[in-house]
Image (tube, rainbow, N blue to C red):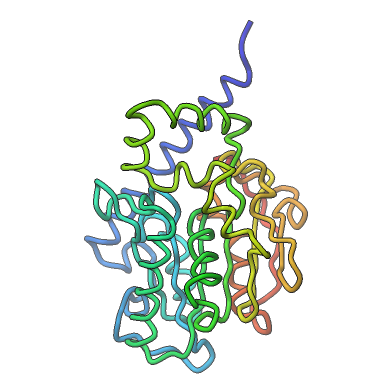
Length: 298
């Protein structure tokens, strides 16, 4: 008898590999070739320390990637789209591990939050802006949330939008207890933590998640927008990314757009996610998001 669930998992793994490879190749094209050839706007508004914020968008936007990604590949689609609206955009690679800037977000999240704090201070200093906006994907939502709450970031950020958000960890579709036990085995836990600091932190219960959640995840000052997908196969349950706190905005993509079947990785290239992000950055002037059918189940 054919195992349909196993088949679906294989398809998702294959699709994820294809998506990652395509994004990497495109990233190399952008990094090494003319920006115009890849459809990018003039590069002076992306990762340019001389970029001057426009009066209509005075806050530079800092894009914070997910675990194992980097600032180029994760933001291949959104960085130029946001910059095209007139924002100064910065895409750091934080938390670099054994592979350097090829794969970031691998340091313990408290350390990554401190690194993000230093980076944002640099953006403010170089651009002369009073505050920044933050957009984060996956771990790129968790690390900024910690920065805002525990490292004084709330005074330096106007808008914070996270998608594929993860504030309460993941059950790994029910395998978190088993993973916790495996990490206790001699040598294995230390090896995993050395290569992937957030891996254990994301498995509840963890001291990091408890510290982030105590008294509420959001803090006064910035606006908070959290965008999640019911099809997320990495953050399980997807409600781990729902803030549900006074003054915060939570968006479940399928409630707004039932024909959007995006998974976790694909949210970085989802036009509906982008529309909600732009609205979160400019609530008064950005057009209302429209529903675009989208199917990328990874």
